[in-house]
Image (tube, rainbow, N blue to C red; front, side, top):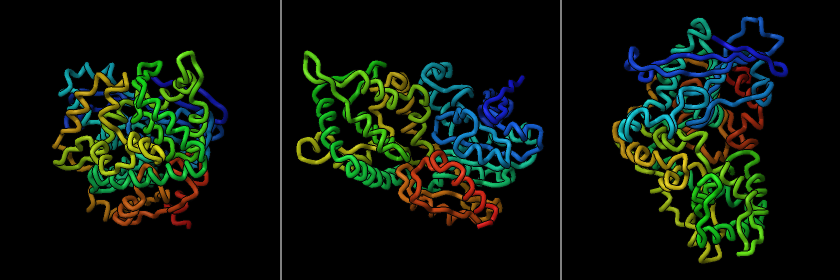
Length: 433
């Protein structure tokens, strides 16, 4: 049964699919996937090619658009669009602290979560594609982790693709998580320096907040233990187009006077907990490092270990001297499973995933070298989330992949640049540039 309804300029249809939990056991347990079909209202009766959108993450459901903003309006000129909630996210069969105990204990939960990487997502797509397109190939637009999935798609099932479009999501084909984070921390430091250059007073504001957190026990309204490391992790937003500005607005009025002295305001704490909580996307924390795992080496809390190689990120040392407190970026740490009530019950599960040594390859370099699918990728010049050098090395390894390297946008360029970004990629893929 499907539900169809209208929003300004578009017709939406809810689609639900059943897929194997384990694609190597197609007759075994199944899970449900949810996707939203979108078509321009004036083209609702036309036979249009399909574009599948793969959201960034891992762990996030597809965008809940109203109407046709950003890139969607441009896509609807040529396509019917399918916005897929990847397995475990959004309205697809969820994987979180409430549902995972149904699998059993931490060991069973960890085994279950190994099936939530890009290889399983690609196989999901190939199960649902014939039901959506009648067997025709479709175009895939992959943003960030969705781009990782698109490269896996080109490796595993290129016969399902008409065109592959990637925005800020060309992964290294062979880098271990340690390599990813060794490249990431210097990029984050550059982003923080740029933020402080734009908003110099934020240096002292951040130092004051960090000092308060080092000398007070702060628990946010949702039960999140707000430590100085958690505060530093708010730097995640610096990788988006408006992130520096949003961070500034968060910092500028953090304190209020109280009978017991200055305290972090309720308004500041409310905003901070919304940014820090993994309640809406726990898979991001659980499998984030696993998306880089492809061999017998464990990830072993890579971002936490590699951070020790960059002592300038130690807030206590910065406060002891005259250095600015550095924010961190897209990293997951074991302390998050102590601080966040949405993650605390899953701490042992996360430890087991971090120790795992039986990861399988996600990409096929030989098949990518022989690629025949028209493909194009936007590579953002100093992307905080995905290393530019890694992306360009992968671009050279995929036959026929054309790149657009730009510093006009940050990692979320497909949102902020919208039609221009999609236009450029379509022109590249169609060999019109």
